[in-house]
Length: 228
Length: 297
Ligand SMILES: Nc1ncnc2c1ncn2[C@@H]1O[C@H](COP(=O)(O)OP(=O)(O)OP(=O)(O)O)[C@@H](O)[C@H]1O
Ligand SMILES: [Mg+2]
Image 1 (cartoon, each protein chain N blue to C red):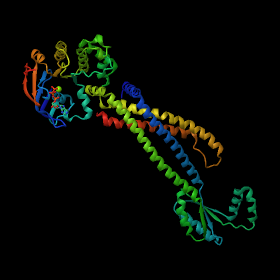
Image 2 (cartoon, rainbow over the protein chains, first blue to last red):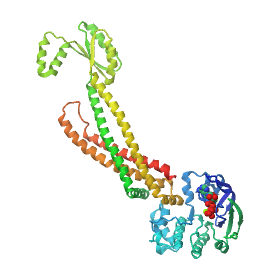
Image 3 (spheres, rainbow over the protein chains, first blue to last red):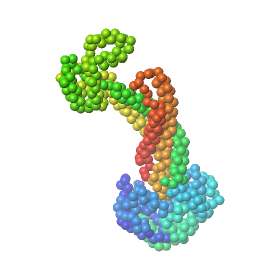
Image 4 (cartoon, rainbow over the protein chains, first blue to last red):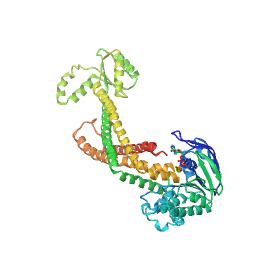
């Protein structure tokens, strides 16, 4: 479902972040993206929800070349992609419930569906009992689970996570990974950039290793392969 | 747009207004100042225009016929005048009629003129009317060249001065008001910019989860529009009450048929509506400027 062909990314300041990337990721895959800092993992991921456009080459999502999308069409692409970050990006003044509901409100879903979906997805990430809390009253792991709930509430076919466990202790990280496995088991593609050797080596999945803007290794049930 | 969505935009827009209270006050104040001046200016200009119009309607040209002219020559002259461009009517008035008019116009003093009834020193006259006051000058130049014309007169100065005054007042007024409107737009766009910066996180999440660009923009338009509307409240009140006061007092005191203020209804209401419209346009314009520049959607 995701295909990149000869993708290059040169930022305005002249830095080449992607240097000819070719890859195919199928629906339902679970992929780790690993590599040293500055290898281009985040840039690679940003191509998939059109946060950045390739300087050269093409990115196809379900057969649609997304570099050529009109401004108006981008929102509809993003409704099919859930994105999760290291720093959660929750709205501090809104409650857990409101943070998650926000994702549906702004795409103009009706309130009945919003209520039903929010409760369902909060249950899925185990936070139903904290729906009224604000982010500051939650642990890091809980905050990340709220972010995950927000990312998956619209049933996206693809979930992208950029170092989702980067700010979490090992135990909490495993809670997050269990949720990802759960989501993936229902057919959702998961792409996760990570620096966590433990996770990659213990929960075996496909591993795409990047260096200097290129894919240097792509293995099913791969190893982390670096000294962390 | 769905009703619930519209409600949400209104809510969000209003929230922004309250959140930015000081900036909002400054922007609304700028709109208020601008619209008060626009209101005064428009009221003045439109009434002056009306006055000029009324005076213009009163203006006519008198063509004095030489005493020596006989009837065929007079008829010929009438035909000639009728041929001149922009002449709408030519009316003959004999020297006896002219004297009667004079006596009537003079009132008390007119009695003296009755002496002349036996030996009338006045000329026969053609009363000529044109479509517009500005055309008399050209007409008079033509008519003067015809034979058997003794003199041509019209109320040249009043009309021309009023027209010139109106013209310059309009230019200066427009320049001044444009500057004010630009200032108000600038202030509003700055306020909206602050809102956009304050809500940057929210906006980036909206983009991330696939909110339509128009959905992201609307609350800012609403905010601008509300500021414009708030700014038009005082000016509208001022126009309505001020004009009511002026109208009642002015028309009672000055009793000349052609010096008359435009009637309160509908004039004051039209101006009010216009001020509201200008306020809204200023507000939306200001927000569009900022949204284009800073929202990046
Ligand atoms: N917006 C940008 N403008 C300019 N240069 C950028 C931008 N984003 C990333 N870069 C540069 O591109 C290169 C790749 O960055 P990228 O963020 O993709 O790496 P990464 O693999 O995600 O690193 P990390 O593991 O530290 O997150 C780096 O040299 C970085 O400085
Ligand atoms: Mg990164």
